[in-house]
Length: 236
Image (cartoon, rainbow, N blue to C red; front, side, top):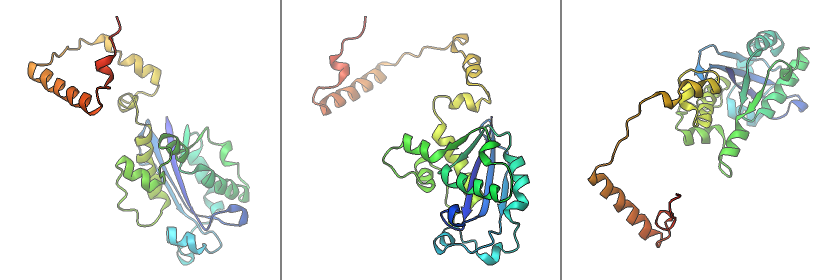
């Protein structure tokens, strides 16, 4: 499984009004592990950034003036993302809209024609944490990802943070299987069939049983006698 985390910084909010990409960052994961095979470009957008966008990324027209134009790096970028199983982007419609506009301007293939699947991590987060803030910074705080170095938005830095956030968002019951390095979930389940192991049965001590009962009594008291384990009969 080859996944690419992708992020862009732009001159403004809409490619339809002529806004351009000023920075593009990609981080590669193979089987959920960082490989270090990343891509990063600063780009000359041939226009100034909006004041609001400049406050976000801090990339001035002067700094970008000697950087390559998107058309000059388009083939290298397409070669990098081609064949990836998934491209993961936070708020994917925004970045994909800009990438499609840049590739069309450069006379290249559409972004969505060379990638197998685009995953919107923002949509995933909204589904997992409904009604909560799901910006990249908010998810870093919620999932324990260190973003202390993020003073301004940066495409490569944000793609690196997104990799950690995505692992946190998708680390469920199959986490141990993924950590074991097994590519196919069905193979992984078969590979660690617990029936092949002689697992010990641990019997609690009298002290542990007494401590457990004390906790149940406290919960029962706090609920006014409505705890289900006191009223539901065990199945026969």
